[in-house]
Length: 393
Image (cartoon, rainbow, N blue to C red; front, side):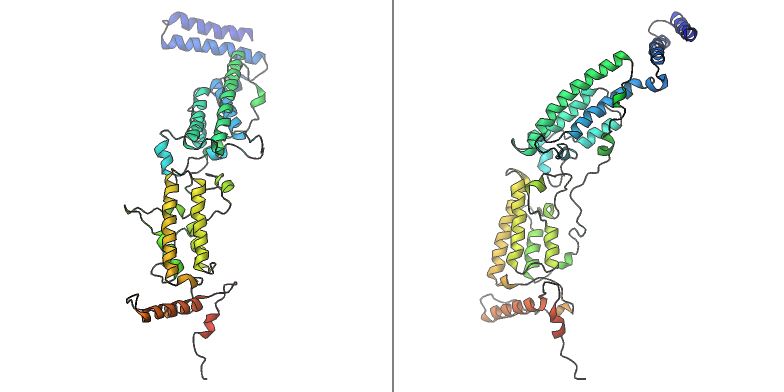
């Protein structure tokens, strides 16, 4: 061992004597001299230099970055240990659902982005990772109301990140000074890989998301009229604002939504219920729409775009519902398709609403359609047997 060490030292010494101080060759010799000292120390300690040297410093840093990130990923609510605090910070909010977030927050950041940077080796120091973590938590406290659960969780994680950063920095310095590898971190779970692989999702997929528009196009059924009016509502500037209500928020993106809202419902779900004949009357349809808008106003801040859009749509919906009910549409039944030719709906030519004959025809039409489209609780429409007179034969 001493002879081999002596030969390496001679090689380094000769190089430093021949090349000028400050030259690339001289600096390489200095680096090799430093490496030699660590390698000898590693061998004498019974370690394999090939495992503890080379990219040793980068490996050490990576382990402590994972340790700090893991501390955030495993932090739980002190009063409810099963609730992890990191979930809502994993992915940024949907730009479609929360455009005001990106107007208010100039430098968005989430745990997915942090995890990707760890995986790519972009952090050269532990404090760089803490800086991005603190950005996530400060953004959350800037956008959300003080006292909200997200605001509180961000505060807890911010303090945790600060304290664990100090611990990791001190441990890394101590390890590098010792020149030996601590085995206790070898088995730690790597969280960054799984979080980096997460996919951004605007909302949970609903299989028939706003398809089958023929359900409501040109329909005379008051339920489809009401749904269509809400779905296609446009502001004074011609902007459609109902699209965000088509599907529910992602459970991964906004898990606290489902803790706050006990009756989540979306326009797509309402449309399916109309199509399946689940609303006995127009008023029952109105109740679900009312719940949807109240959910929006309960979860979102009053100064947010979503709250304002929901409030505007709710006012329009109430006006439209009252208009349909005053027209006699309150007796409408489920808008399920009939098994036989659907052209049997009585067509009435438009005329003055003050015309008594027109009013009578309208009521007769409503009565006919309510019987023609009616289905029982099993979805069976008994009208089929009455569509044709039995054959004389």
